[in-house]
Length: 282
Length: 282
Image (cartoon, rainbow over all chains, first blue to last red; front, side):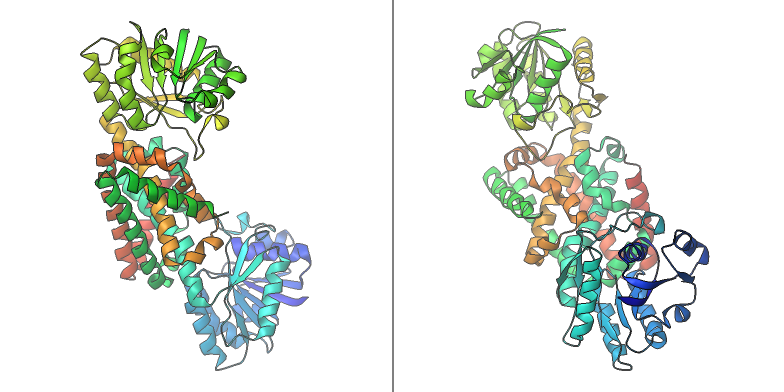
């Protein structure tokens, strides 16, 4: 049982954690922290938060569990202030979509003062954002990746894992580097490609989008994601993304070569192999 | 009212046309034509077809409306035989996903014998195939593109349009070249890209696919499509596809440049523009 849960950023993810924690009775007290008091109001009014504050220090001062639910680059910047303000024994985790930069920053801070940090990344979300789309069941059946390192305290890892499991999630563990490579492949690359697809299609035949069928709509749905959030993610995971784009380019070039050469058999074999790979994805 | 509707290929599309035509009472008699009598049996047993034959000539000999519902390259090959076997006054259309090659072949044949041909392409389908997934409402609300040329007889165009509208579709008209460029952009390119995405992700981090979240699943769903069908489509629309892939590559390179240079403002602006374009798609 958490005594005081402080959630920094009460949007889709932070708000959903707050709602689920409230519903599950996981914390005695839930404090929401945000820059804009007006935006925190709905979560206070509907009983999800016990307290809403705009001052980070005041919000985390008495928290034994701090969740940073801001965009990735913002989390990195917040860590230092949280590190100064949180009480001894506090456990800090986050929801950032990249982990190397955040975990590295937390480990540098741990050298100055021994607080527990465990990186988390819930693979849940939406192309929509904000508290109004937050829901208590967002994490039910979703995967949350935790990213411990050799420096992570086992008790803190266990507590963080149990927290996400209590929200209904399946928890996987990856080291921060593997995590970043993995999300580059399954999340950041698809997003980047969906964006290039919308842009490429519009360039070649501007009127084509009016006729877009289900395949195009599904493939490009995520291109309507929040530009601010995705700018941060792409920049934060630049290196891993770049390697993945390269692998994608090679895969595309292989397909193109078979098409340009009119090699039906070779093309069919590649497509069949890809179909089999795709069918392994639930 | 059609006297005898002959459908060559009773799979997802041909079967759905047969079911919808039966339900809507659009034809006195519906004949299904396929290479394998056993595969035609279910459509005969459930009352969708009045007659099932494995001989093309016998199947179209008394038809006033012939629908070619085979893969694109097969349709091209079938046209000549249909042209010889169909009775005077018959109207022939198809469901091929590319149109330049098919329309051109039909116009060459029209010089030898004056039959009516109108190219059709229903933008409906599924990554599944076969009569067992056919359904009478497949075309309800879907778009069907018809591709008349200067040589197309207006009465035939009207009849074909009314046929698809009677199945619940919205009909758009494009010349064959614009059609092929358009479907390259909104259908063939997304399919090719989804395939490269699955392959690229598997290359860079083979275990990544196990963690695939909703974004990846949606973006790559179509990569599980039928390899035979897509081999034909990619080869049949090679030129238009190639131009579209080039536009896609440029769009991707623009995004990558902004990411590699760490230009947050430029990247945000491009992503916002793409989001606005995507939001125009229903």
